Image 1: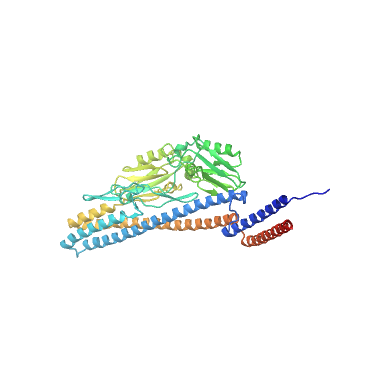
Image 2: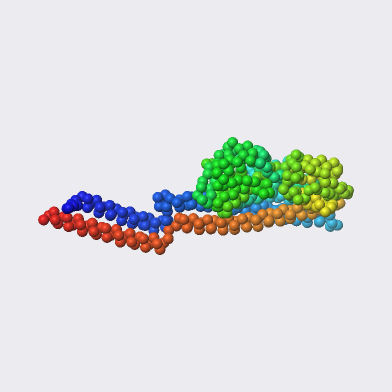
Length: 513
């Protein structure tokens, strides 16, 4: 049987093969030019999801790096300001020592009044230092000057709140020092150093989490190492238990949610890496303590506990769990030592009632996640453990409470200088020593923050390098392999062109004959 192959059919085959060779050549030319293995979704659909996830993780990580860099600017600015305050106080000490000595004269004291007044102005300038237009010592009122002179007194215009900076997926740290710490002219204060926030429960209302700041209602997106993606609508959730139930239902148990062992936040379990991200422009995930991802199969969320109040049971506070019942602590105040027995206390309200009834002139206050002792006098006081329960330490109260009267001390010194009262000048110098100790403590605290920021920056940059490497494995082309394939594609395309031209040349000669 004879089969006839038409010229048009032969031409179509040649053109198709020529186009395929050209397409392959262009593909490898594009890879060689971009040095990317994946230049479109069609190149490797499986890798596209991984590439997008790594890009998101890298973007988040770089945002944390920027946060650390901006926080470092604030902390470094605070360090410079504290050194400036220390230097000014050193000048004040020189004046107080000079004018309380035998060499002091009427004229020198008058001159010293002017010097102290000038130093107060310098202090105001230092304490009203701005960084990028934000006042360092105004607490969270960063656009308001921290201190303002009103007649012969200085007023603090900021608040007592610290600015928390997110330095990683699950970590925050305070970066500022509220200026109210310099204004304790009416009382001595000791703030507890231990968190007394209660553990989360399944019935904990979402409006109470984050120390009463609540949460943002919305949806979150969950990804696991198996390539699963779940968008979980949490808008109808009212309690922590609702969030857990909704996540477990939406994922079918592939990713399970529960409470952290210490009750401070949520925890996810699944096949890692686990990633939690926002949906749209919301911040639901971050308000629940989820900020980025976990390389392993367990994602531990951040601390979102509620604030403590008088109804909080001591047994519900993780940091007190192994120390109940509490025992005795001694309070030395105004020359008297009071023994405070807290063994019968079962709630935070019991602590307040017992302490306030035992120590006259002092008040125990509940402040979000800790407690503070405030006296009605600027005299210092001392809190010590009184038995083997170490109750003062457990509550974070072991130590001394003292006033910080920076401007008050300077005003008293001016008054003493104007009245030429050397005893009062010496009294001001004693108070100056206490203030200088406080400044040194603040400098040490700030130095610790600088160290922590250095550590966080190092970890974040190592993580960025690791993520960039993982992205490169999915995204970047193998230079040697691309070069070899490009050479083969060029040879194939040139061969196709040669064969096609030869065939068309033969047909043309036949036609002319």
